[in-house]
Structures are given as structure tokens and as C-alpha cells.
Length: 267
Image (cartoon, rainbow, N blue to C red; front, side, top):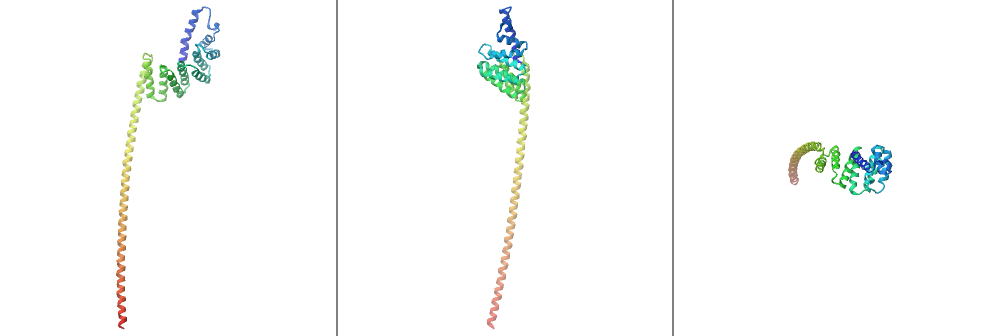
């Protein structure tokens, strides 16, 4: 959309300058590829404009960057979407840093229009790396981030946009969006805090239950050990009583034997 706006505003200025220089000449009759391409795009003859724009973009000149951007626009309007991405990426690699920001912005906007949000956000970031004062990139990246649900980062981008464009006609809408997002952020923070409290409470309940279970198991082990000790003592006591009974029996037997021996001697 921004490319088309640029076309609508830049092209009339170009035509006006040509009319001021010559009343009889027109872009179609000058033979200049750039002028002919501009006229073709203006009248939506994109198939005619594309080879002319390729020619201008492929050689050094003052219109080279504009030719790349207009070529991408013409290709998109002509339905040649794969060529749009390839054209803009090549242009970014071949263009000076000062111009690369606008080209990266165009590619990001292309991704955004065609529902490729992750690539759009990445390319807006790339555009801002080339040119940190590119206000529309902050605005568009904020919109992408809203759709992605990354509200804090979106608010930051909206605020940067307003800092660069304090008199923007969209300021009321942007401020309203910031307020709504901040409400969502606060609600999300409250929800996360409540979840954290519930998690902590559940962990504490689990800790208490585990401690109670440990104490109960320890008490059961101690009771079992006491029972075993009592049983062992009882068995040992029983064994002791049995031993004493055996010794008494043996003593009585010996006494009887001695008595019998004495009788034999007397006989």
C-alpha cells in the first residue's frame, strides 16, 4: 500500500516536471525507459512496465532504487509473487545501506500483505537495522506483533512510532491501541500471578501431605520395630525358661543314678 501511495504522489510530480520543460513531449515519446515505465505503471500496464523497470534497475543511475521498488510493485500487481521476493532481496544486497532500509521495508510489507507474519516481523527488524528512523516500520511491526500476541513488544513499537511521528494523523488510534494492549498486559500479568499463587499453594499442600505421609510411615516403622523387639524378647524369655527346665531334669536323673549305685555296693 505504501508503495502504491508513493507511486500516486511521485508520478504526478515527475509528469509535471516534464510538462514544464516541453509542451509537446510526453513520457511515451521521450524514449527514456524510466519515463516509459512510470507511465505504464501509472496506467496499470504492468506487463509493459516490468521489462523497462528491469532495464533501469540493472544499470547504475539515479532511479535505480526507485526502479527496484516499482518493479516489485508491478510484479505483485501482475501476480508474479515469487519474483517480488527475489527482486527485493537482490535489490537489498546490491543497494547502499541508505536505500536498503526502504527496500527491506517493502519486502516486509509484501510478507505482511500475503500473511507471512514471522517473515514480515523479521524483515521490518532488518529495515530498522538499516534505518532506525523509519517510523512506518515501527508501526507495521507493532501491528504484526499484536497479531502474534506479543503485546509488550507491540506497545514498545507503537511508542517509538509516536516518538518519531508525534503529529501523526493516526496518533489517537495508536494511543487507543496502546491503552487496550496495556490492559491486556496487566490482565495477563494478573492471571500469571494467580497461577503462580495456585502453583505455590499446590506445592505447599503436596509438601505438607508428603511430610504427613513421611511421619505416618515413620511411626508405622517404629511401631513395627517395637512389636518385633517385644516378640524377640518374648521368644528369648521362653527359650530361657525351657533351658532351666532341662537342667532340673538332668539333676534329678543324676541323683537317681547315684542312689542306684549305692544299692549295688550294699548287695
